[in-house]
Length: 160
Image: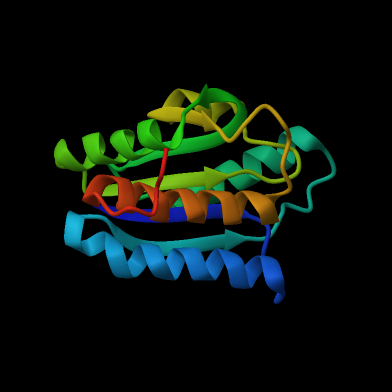
């Protein structure tokens, strides 16, 4: 299954970008052995619209263009379902085992995600009840993707 990340906002060169890249590289190297592949990282600029609703709608349109037809869509949102690392790994494994070809994980912009996306999403997941800047969310989700591969493959990286 090909996994893509979609993010509103671009990471500038620096430690956040380096750390996210490190975990995505680990995921890209370890994932194919268990049927998970890093497909793409799509970054889009935040909308310049004058109000929040229009910005979210503009950004949702960009996500819909980037998301493969028939693919699984997971939204990251503080109101989503809280999963531990093992449950996150199991969710990815389930989608993979169901024969899903593509999965996109979406990180919204400063205004959040457009309400229309929630009806289209297969799942909404939170990384805790706190609000995180998108730079840290990229690192967190990149690490969790790598951790999911290690859990699914029985590697000792994840210790409980």
